[in-house]
Image (tube, rainbow, N blue to C red):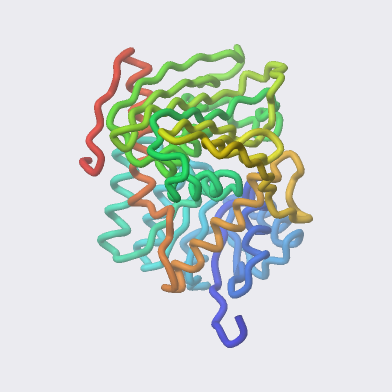
Length: 348
């Protein structure tokens, strides 16, 4: 990208995912991290030394005032997202935020409105849909090869000890639906369109956590497809545990499409079955346990950078992701009342 001005950004947060988020940006040309913020300055200083960030702040407001970044990437605790989004919007600075966007639909709507009124681009770093096998299934559905889909199963259930890497997850009142559910419900929307109805049941298997660690969500999507999303970190010895891969099986009027373990995608029609692996790009910095997830960070970042440059459309805008947040909290409501929730897409 010779001759193209680099976009300078500020990274907010220095936790577990921030390191991988920054490494993902480093894979792209035309962008550089100019500064990092963390409320604990010593942690920010160590992070900056490790990853080559030139300036460090323990005041987000001071950083924005002095550095004037081209955009902000927020990778802090979700409870702080709305504050930092509104802080950036007040200064006219485009913002990227991790998921879940907000702890409620009302807060998410407020964040979106704030950025709209400030005419500030607001994107959600929703990388799950950028996984290579999932993109392949989308291509198959778009091509019409298997006909109109009428039933699908999306499964992300694992015995992986996720609480070991992220112990704070144990303290969440709402866990699997906000943590993993936002990813999987977004994938469902990406593949099948908006939901008209939703029914959910939740369970807590781990006795020492506050929130739910298992959830099952069934939706009618796009007016024609029954989609079942199975989520869970029960930490039991499951035979088909392929963490962190998402398994998918779609039935269409003319065939089926499947994402299986080891990145295999199989498409079956009357002509037979074709199978091909779609493994992720490997990066030296990626944790092998999270390879498919970390690889998708780069693809998501590339899409958002294109939009920030005015060279294309961002898939995961905050306006779009608001529909995922609505599904997430509709799932909690359904589980609470034990009833199907009827949704009107586009109506807040």
